[in-house]
Image: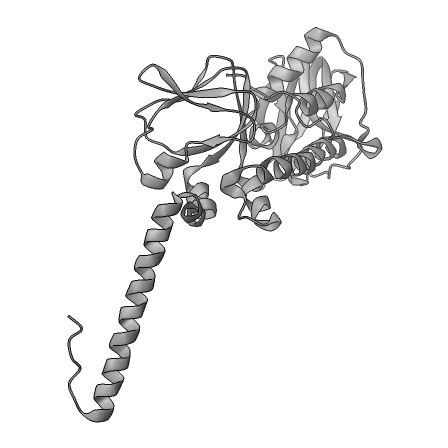
Length: 322
């Protein structure tokens, strides 16, 4: 399965979305890609939703710095200005992070050493807009790459806005979600997680427990049962809801016929947001039967109540309606 989906949000950047561009060879681009893709949380979670195009725009924005031995890259306690270097990736060299001991203000403790190419640091202050948590010093001449907090925030916000617009258009064509209004669709969109499958990948396994609901955004997929194709899916189609609604195993396998981009809704979010919609999508005859049953119950309850009131007035016991 691909780590990032294709660049489907083509309208993401307008003239206001221009970001810095610093040329770099493919070796450095791959170093930066690997560093960010493998970054631990919170940075990993912060960047994981970016599609391929936005991710490459972020790579474009990194610029190089030659750092002499003994120079401070980061100073503990300082705030990160929007336009100054904020997030760093080490290309070559060695740096150490030192933190002031609160019990002994004149004493510093070494808390981290960065010497592996692709080491990431500085992310906490960028994500949380907090003061630097430690001082990072070059203990030997080093080369690092940086991107400003302003650029990181601009790219992620642009992607989120484009994602909302893109998914909203897609969700309006999904039959299951047509009873939802715009605000309700936005609640669904906030919970969707993108996922990419390659051609031939199994998306759902027949017989497995169902914990996810899938919306097909791009590509084609097929449902297979006992070796036969029983359903085909195109962009705008959805699947996986039956196992969630009925708490039963998956009724069929679903395979990606081409590379597929899907929006995934987890079970807890599905039940919270879409559970009430199940009534709209059961067979019409079953709905009419249930409606008739409810009307008959209500009629009987109304008749019984009238008899009780009449009995209270006349002093008679209510007669059985059997």
